Image (cartoon, rainbow, N blue to C red):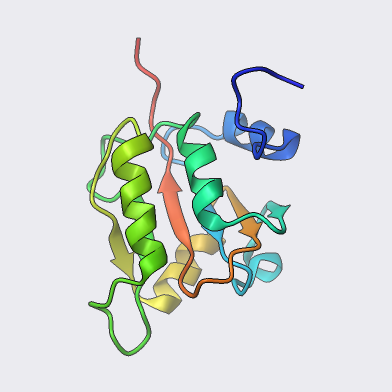
Amino acid sequence: MLRGLNPLLSPDLLHTLAAMGHGDEIVIADANFPGTSNAKRLIRLDGISATDTLEAVLQVMPLDTFVADPALTMQVVGNPDEVPPVVDKFQWLIETTADNPSPIQTLERHAFYERARDAFAIVQTGETRLYGNIILKKGVIAP
């Protein structure tokens, strides 16, 4: 047990976040996401929502300030301008929790999958809301 850390940050997830370097990306994925077939490293948080996972991760991981899109979500198929409720919640969490709040950008579904395959790790959650997927780019910790 450790003090001051969100209990959702499992030992595997904490190790992964600490091992990531500047510019590495991590995916927080919903229960429908093809995590096993796309991940270099897969961490499972079954029964945990993507929004709770995002909040826990943002409490310890800085977002990249050197890019315009440190947070990316998947566009709704057939309606790329639609913003699902879970993505609204992601944006609110970034604005209230992240060290570098920025607007979420979007990627077409297949482009999102391709980007996810290149990510350092995928965290597969139990999120059942559709489009509950987000890619985060790790920043630096400055003095």
